[in-house]
Length: 386
Image (tube, rainbow, N blue to C red; front, side):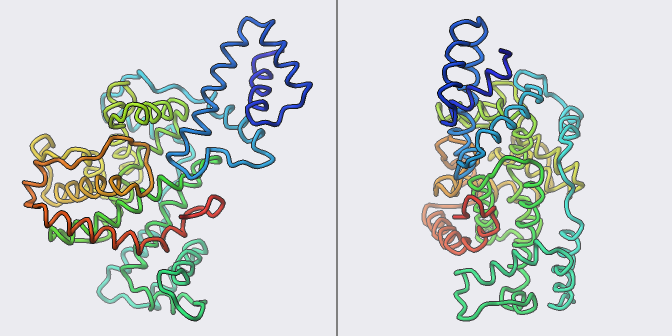
């Protein structure tokens, strides 16, 4: 028996789909082959990462429990066997991160319609008919807008069937949020054939909405750029997951076990930093520089430890940093970072956020999260949105 066949038998046993004969063959191999025990232990470890650790990023294990779960798991193992381990690799400069992103051969480009609709929505002469014409060109976005319009968020007595009615009902700001959110989740979902990342996207959507709340409180411009940056703040984690699935799940499990910050463990384990990976992905997509800059430094509350940045970028970083902490305190979704979230006192002092003001921000964010559940309908339906 070769190692691949033995690994497949081990997966079948772990998936409770092995026959008595397969169990017997597997047991004999364990007794007779010198390499079998090591392969068995490694397969069990990887299987546990995919069925348990992965639950932090999704409502379910990486492979949903179905009759074909064994076959899917085998394919996932085969995919991971082709990946190059990133732990311990020297990741020091911008070019190296750009090279890593170039290896994400399944990473799609941002939909052209996203930019077109965003520009149209921000046009002072925008009208419902123009937005409707643009949305009609993308059936997935059209479906998402109609689903939200018919969600419990609006509680309408009659079903909305037309885009014109939905846009008029929701308003341009709401339409822009759903267009950005649906586009990002949709094209990232195309980047892999296995993962459903509902908890990850719940966290991202929560941070995006909370960032807008914080921005309003601090008098920072609440616009498409701010929302998009917050939605994408952890996009580098998906890059790491697609490049080295097993290695990054191990880092996430370390965070779960130790409660240490995920970004700290990335540095300690010499693994690509998700902040820098996110920066490189956004540059690869040709997004505005302020988005990639804010994503790069969204874990740094001390403005003096950041490089010289435009004022609007520092404002964006402050808003996302605070929103991220508050969303994690709310346990709204999960992005793999199990650190006990505490707000940096220096940031609160610099922004003049006293206790009463902070409590008001928390209350406003809670209200925002109560209203965001319709937006979660965008998430893949096979695992459920909420």
